[in-house]
Length: 223
Image 1 (cartoon, rainbow, N blue to C red):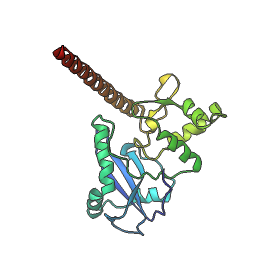
Image 2: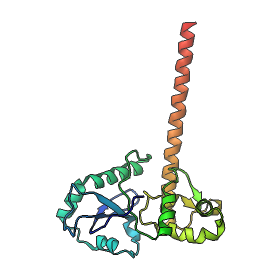
Image 3: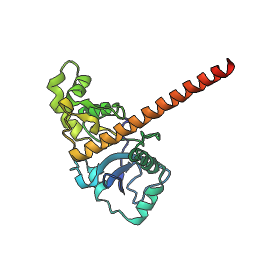
């Protein structure tokens, strides 16, 4: 994750998804601008399901949430290349595919410890899961279980849902625990990814089978 720039403006944008409305909060280095600029980069600071709005502790996240969603600002945001990238990513994700477009620039705001945990979350591959204990051991191999509670707390305060995939962290024995946006939503996200991976495996197997048949037919024709 890149180092956070000096954020001086913040904006919120809302989008509908199959699992409920999502709010994205963007930061800009544009000085106190009432409208975002299409030529200046935007940094995604928060992404959350609107029915479980987190309690923000950072002033720029709070400002972005409270800023009036006037039509002019929303129209500019809608055409901003960074936001369009984020919307394309969400579209591909919720259509049941591992997104092929790159992530927008993510600037989660948190303590050095939290940032370390969120950075590790970002390495959990699509369609896979890891337990809280495994995550703690991966981050702190010498301390292991002693850090599980602190690591779990940081996971639970991840400000950028989906794109920093905290939903892929599960409890011991596969239990679905500790998701800020509801266990049922976590279940659906994991099922969506599992189905996408299963479909991809079938397509790969079918393609491999077709290739083998083609080779056999070519050999049979020669003989």
